[in-house]
Image 1: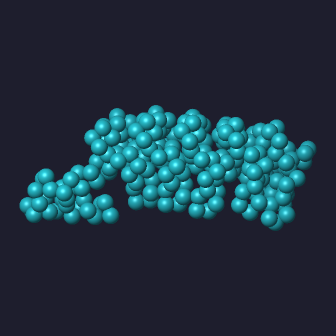
Image 2: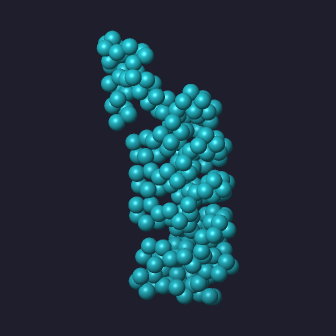
Image 3: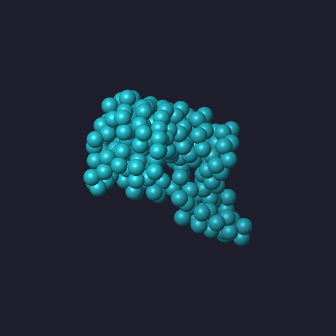
Length: 220
């Protein structure tokens, strides 16, 4: 919608239909600033992000797939940029069109410093996306052990049950994430829990051919 308005306004300005000080020209200018902000975030250009914000860009403006500049920074692991955006009022809970929050993006990428930053500013570790997954499930499945530990320290239950009765241990087991499995077991994860198919973490590991996970879980 913003792109359409901006294009219309640009055409009207070129043909002299509206003046530079008109409401439509102001809308076009605002849309251009927001586009500059998002482009700077995509390229990792923090000075340009700061300049766009200083010039009035909307910090939570989104691109066509719903990514804000903060989500982009979290996906790319640019901690300084994420901090700058949060300091300018970015909504740490604003999700994209798939329901993925900045915390999920950072957890999926294993960006522990950004996860810590988001949690410190009120990000909700219990938020779910459109497929019902949380930051913990992404971190455990990807084997981002430091992020898993960070989420546990933030109060996420080690035996919390997620969609389909899966636990973080089951996610880690299914993807053969040995270090993450060790951490979860050390923190009290229960390997006897079963998903909605009646399968334990060991069963899931065996089914997926996750040999390291099978060995670890066999001793429990």
